[in-house]
Amino acid sequence: MKRFLIKFLLPIVILFVGAAVFNLLRMTKPKALPVEQVEKVWVVDVETVNQRSASPELSLYGRVETPRIPKLRSALTAEVLSVPAREGKRAAKGELLVALDPRDAKLLLEQREAELASARADIDSERKRHENDLDSLKNEKTLLDLTRRSVTRMERLQSSQVASESLLEEARQNYERQSISVRSRELAIRDHETRMARLQARLRQAQAQRDLAALDLDRTRITAPFDGKVAKVQIAAGDRVRPGDPLVELYDDQALEVRAQIPHRYQDQVASYLNEGKPLMAQAGGARLVLDRLASMVSAGRGGVDGLFRVEHGAERLRVGSFLNLTLTLPPENQVILVPYSAIYGTDRVYEMVDGRMRLARLERVGEATDSDGRTRVLARSEELVDGDRLIVSQLPNAIEGLRVKTADDIAP
Image (cartoon, rainbow, N blue to C red; front, side, top):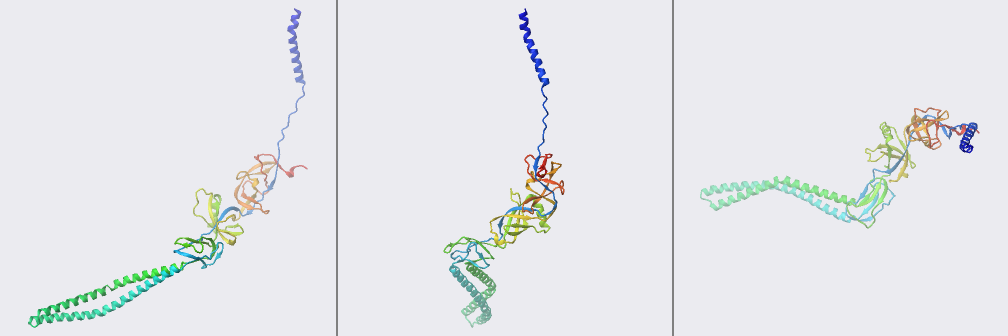
């Protein structure tokens, strides 16, 4: 019995003692001190806001072109005798560019001049003929009167049995023949104006043909229509050209333009300046430009309207077809600030430093401008920023309003 009690109670005692020891250890263990959360402070660079008056600058990409770049073509079939034109060479107005063989043109001109002389001779002959018809009509009428009186006399004699019937018939035939002659002469006189009009038309046609032949002869010498530069030469001496074949391309280097796309967000502003007559200047490749006009059409898929810039100075540095980076200067804007690109998040968000924390502010972009150190910055205005505010210019990956920040000057040595 005793052995049974020991065997039954011993495990219970052991469990009780173990539980008591566990509770004693738990109650007497040292208490852990609470871990203090330390907020991270980001070191940033700041700039003091300084509102000013500044001219916005737009960076554009343009291409040099000209509205005056004719393609000179052959007007006749001929062989090329010589080509004084050279690509890239400057040509004065009237200077010979291409000479074609003039022999065929000269022969044709001589033929047309002969036809013209023939037409003039025909007119002179018609005038003389008309004068002769007028003079002859008087004689014809006199003869008609004589034959009429002869018929009357023969009729009287025949009734008196003095003249024979055959003589009377002969007198009547003479009268009829003379009558026909008079009517023919009168018809010729009446038809004079018609014949003269026909001959005058033939004369004008001959003159036109002669002038056209003379023009073709002149066209054997292809000359520069204005002062400019030779862009392309497409033939060589000895070639045979036909009407319409291209010969030389020439462009007016004093009428150069630069076409550049102006973004949509500046389109209305730029158009307003143009309507007000305000000059909009630009610089490109050492040349000075002025915005002359805006294109009347916008192609599908384009992000803006094309502006056409007139070259005021430095045209000799530009080449048709070359691409340029332009800097367009707009009229000054008041109460604007120069903001580094690194300070901008998205398109219009910046942060200022207030009591050691970041505070969000919104911007309205006006354009770009260059600071005194030659750096390009965003020109903007904001109703939430005033002079003296500390603008955070460091780009932080986790920028958010309320984030704790400090400057390098705030770090204790």
